[in-house]
Image 1: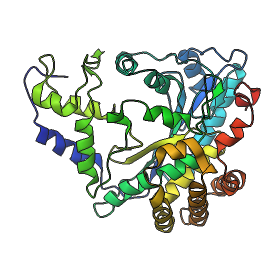
Image 2 (image 1 turned 120 degrees about the vertical axis):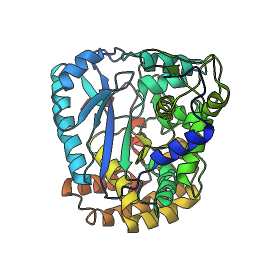
Image 3 (image 1 turned 90 degrees about the vertical axis):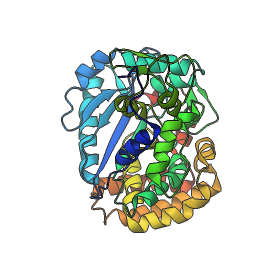
Length: 401
């Protein structure tokens, strides 16, 4: 809650963020959060009340069920080994999908709702203020809130000797992974010209909180600078939030105040939760740039990301072949694997992942999902968006399980 007098300095804020950004955990545990767009095939433009979906999804036993502002359903695993995480998510996905199907609802694994207008069905002070903030810039923020769905993969930051390199690696492999798993070529019922319209939409939002931080040899310090340079999105006490009438970075709020109020450490911690870059430092590394996928492709996306981050041999290959593609996020989102450079890098990385999965003790189901993804897409220079573009956005195939 803000204070009427200055309670922290910029130096305090930097030290606080640095000390919490990247832990020293390096035990190989991973986690994943997988999202789906929930639709009623009998009325594709309708949005089912989130309370209805929540009551049906409450039978999930091994993962946590939450909802994004537009009603996108999210299953989040506990930390664990790759196979255990994927098994928990897969088991609960099957249970929840059956429950929803019994009520005439369908879960779609896609990065952006291809048809419906952007309308919230989840409310609360945070989302109210976020919507007001983004609406001042254009429609992209509301579209992000109400229509996008992603896969988030969480991996350890690593010990002091490796965490800066792991931070860089998570960004270096990003454009290649975006291209390989691009899965959102439609919006408002029409092709957009992007394989990942979801990522293109993120790039069109407030860049102070969605752009990737600059790379450096001090990941924690870079993250601290990034956070303090990001605009203040909302000011409040948890019960009520207001979006400021003007834009200013958090650093200025510390040093000059706003409307007679100054931030506390609690406000700083909350501010960090409103930052949405491709990779977020949360003690662990939260990799946020993957479009949502249908099963079993979401399992492949989790496994490939984990292998490229956690297996030393696969990581070495990925750092080398993806280095020329680093920073080419928009090309990846637009072209997918139709770009020869991205296609070649993906083939090399997926070959390395295939060899790495036994070392990571991945089960046969996970290994088979990766193999099938390679055969279906990577080996052919294609991504899931290419398959979607071969059928109209209004096709029943987009809402059928």
